[in-house]
Length: 465
Ligand code: AMP
Ligand code: SF4
Figure 1 (cartoon, rainbow, N blue to C red):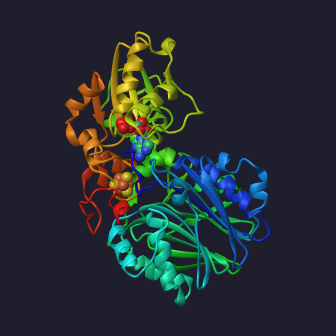
Figure 2 (figure 1 turned 90 degrees about the vertical axis):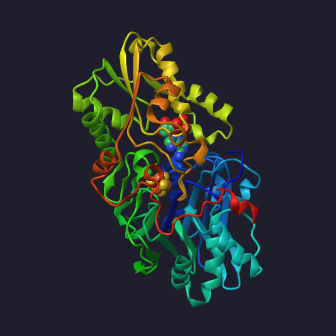
Figure 3 (figure 1 turned 30 degrees about the vertical axis):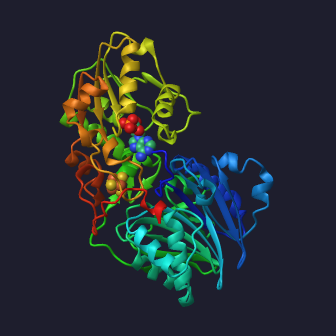
């Protein structure tokens, strides 16, 4: 895990609005998407041909701590990006938006997702003499678009999409417009907002709320939308054999106040809790969530069974997500810094603890120790998603196969490892029901990867090319 891997969980925001301070609105949009990536942030602005960008390592507020930086970014349109990745060598080179000069002008690109055929595409481009500055898939997309650009930007994007396999939501700024595209399966989210007659695009609807834009609709799988002085237009790019939105966005990744593909994230998490209650009703003194992503499910569970909901664990809101720490030791320290147990609530109690997912098992292990240390008599662990047995090839860092605890152990083994009195995971059917039976990818749970199946290569092969 100590490598610079070409996989990201990222946040995108773009706006075309000549009357507005587009960089500042993008800054606010990125602020709302901070949970999608805390390692780097950047904003690119453009009037027509020229593109100006500022990007750096750190949180949005750190990268743009000096207001003069925002004030200096003037343009009728802007795209922004927050990036998550594990640590490595050339981090700043991987920060986005990526901006390039080429014979037809300038282009900026912000990308969320992961291409499953990136190594092949990169090899082909390298054979054609293309030089790469970063180790991201995003630069591959940018180079393909630049190569096809003679036909006009939308055509170039659609041609590029024909070459791409895997998951992506992208924003491309150039030629006086911003193009937003979503992969043919609609794996990664992207939605459209409207602000005083102008349009914006964002990974999640919470970013639209923050800038005062109204939600218009989600970008459809394989759709290519353009926002410009002409308003909003749309073309259909390549279609997938099915729709497969990422279920993990609902389980963990997205903000609960976002609505993605017509399903509100808080409500889907709440329903996951109700499903857990139907599948595994327990007697308990209190139901406690692992905050914050376990909270709606814990509430749903407690309400369904008429149990007492309590905040037995308190989160320090000034600590980032635990996975951001690259090494195992640092990750464990981060868990302790992040959550503290409330002894007054927990002492002598028979506790049901609800978390959204169990990946490596580190979090549950530490928290069960903590809850017991605070005097709980019994700790029953409920997980509002099925066991994560397979790695994600579509842009979510669910860890290498070997470090996924459910890949190595059965449920009883995991229960013993984390030290719980009992452990229950939501069933796949329960998850589907909570997601209202829509078309979702569940590959990290059921191993049914989308067509074409990902190659069995190591995750960081792109680094070696
Ligand atoms: P683990 O400690 O490896 O079992 O991780 C499970 C915890 O990490 C849960 O509390 C989740 O809320 C959280 N989590 C799940 N998936 C991710 C992810 N892709 N990135 C960061 N945190 C995650
Ligand atoms: Fe989402 Fe899992 Fe599918 Fe990856 S494999 S896209 S995390 S549901």
